[in-house]
Image 1 (tube, protein in one colour):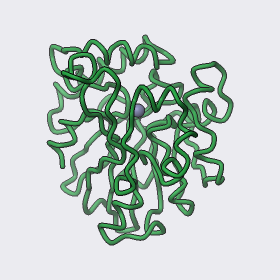
Image 2: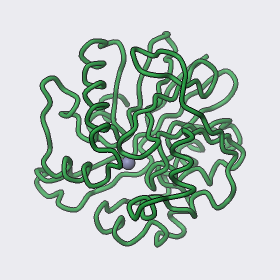
Image 3: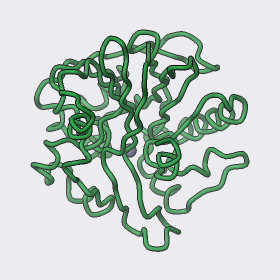
Image 4: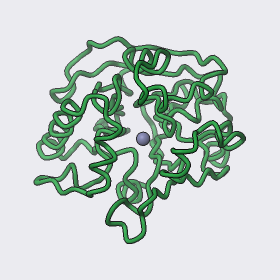
Length: 265
Ligand SMILES: [Zn+2]
């Protein structure tokens, strides 16, 4: 059972083209969750880790130049947990929306934890097939040999989506293919029995999920560029828009929208 949920930013970024915020937002976050459960701590997404800070070059020059992450030691999940009085070993499970550089960087700081990901995403990262996949996945982020928990597709109904149980009944992977081959949202049961949905990179900009949607010009281009299955990405974004409109009791948020994080913190 979930007893408490913390919303963390494990990697502020200031994307190129940000001045004025018209082309790209001035500030992007790496929205992660720390879920306190009776059985231990669960981390949802992991932002950048100490390994990324120690070897910034491993993130690649194009990423550093375009996305411009702060890479601050106090923002790593492991440092924020320490500030809350937790040891890395207290984290039993890390559930990842996908294995892009700004989501998987922190897993090296939790070598004891099970690392949950969809089977399709694991395959894409271990056997990248295209130039885009070869560039986006940083093999050094899992060179320590994580305890992977790879989840095949197929599960139960979750508000009309497929829900694949990851940690008990409280943390559920919601496959949302598009941004990457095995991209998923992560639904977490709240202490009062409701749900929140970390939608990962299903959308980047809060306006995209409003009805009717509004778009940030630069963000649309960036997302198209990074999408493996663009049509499915747009379809899944539409489904999330319907979820939010039809189920206001489910709180849906993006991995990267800063105002959404500020509102939830
Ligand atoms: Zn991302």
